[in-house]
Length: 90
Image 1 (tube, one colour):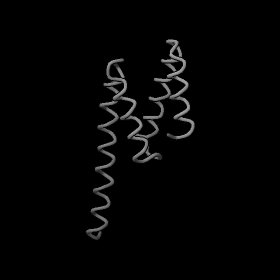
Image 2 (cartoon, rainbow, N blue to C red):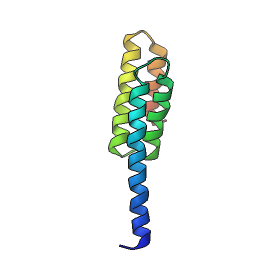
Image 3 (cartoon, rainbow, N blue to C red):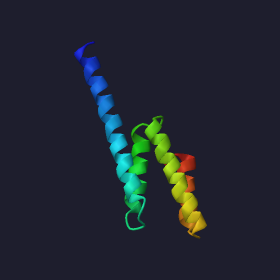
Image 4 (cartoon, helix red, strand yellow):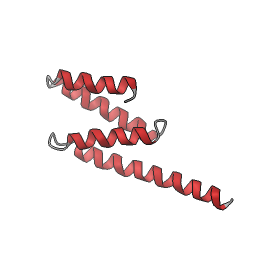
């Protein structure tokens, strides 16, 4: 394995670990209405880094859950806005 291949693997490992750590933080922030905006941004960041990763899939599922919760609580506009972001990938 060349040094370049090792560096690339190391970069990939770091990205994955960072995504996982960000997911854990987002899950904690999601528990409170006071910090849910941090969760939203963190989930979006995880998706943006590697949209095809397992972590991005978890982040999308969490965002759908947030939108569903908002919809049930009568926060229709916020839920619709989040659903739209998920549909268009932004």
